[in-house]
Image (cartoon, rainbow, N blue to C red; front, side, top):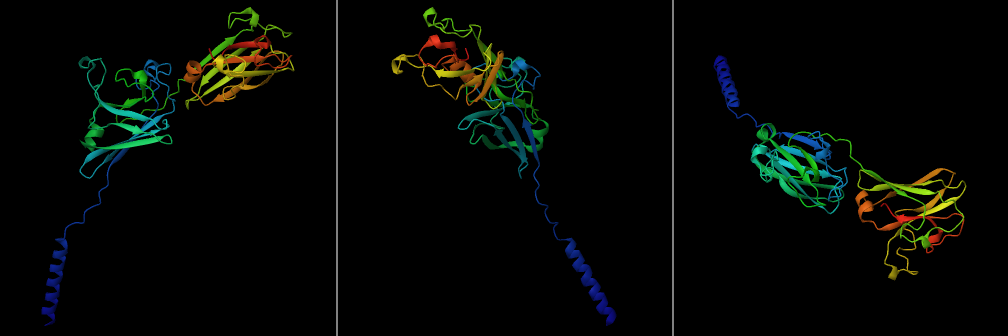
Length: 333
């Protein structure tokens, strides 16, 4: 009886073991693949050619600190999901962002090494920016591994401050190979200087408006405008041959319609301190002062209409009598 019971227990154990072995293996949780790629601003580094960098002297006016991040994520069906994120964008702007298939330049209308029509199956959309950030996600019908390993194309972020071009690389804020890092490059920031001679009435071609006073007539001024990477600008005003111990009031005055100003001046008599308004202490040689502006290099040197005035420290300031001005000239021109 004991033997029979033992055999029965053994048989039951074998049956239980067999039954356990027949249970389905537990499914492993899906772990999606994911790759990310960073893209710096277009300074011509993709082709190692400064001529293909974003053209700040062109029709656009965008800061050079914008960057992009590409995220490719595997979905459960094996296809790829593409997300593009922008950083340091302009608030309220919509950025056209496109993927362009690589192509033989001999087959494209304008000899571009890519199809000018974006590939919307991978990514083509408008990314809205708020607080400097924006992103958009698209699900593709392309296999994740194939998109990473075999797709040949370019990622382009167009400039929303000008009309889109699919051929002028100088209008591209970001230009990189899709699925490859684009390292940041040194920003191509501009500097321009503007020289001002002593006021001899030359601004209005009228010698009656030349300086009339006791100051030496060898004083000169210079404005240097520097472009900043965040899209703002900085100015430095220098005075040459400034008298030692004298404080020179230097002002920017916005241009205005003379019919609207109290004394018929072609400028607002109140200085524009956002551009420049301050005293510069003379030392017998060259002295200077700086100001950081909220407007761009292009805005200041192209669109701002105003005057640079250096007042005479040897007499009372007048905002209407040009014969008291040591220097008077168009600002940043």
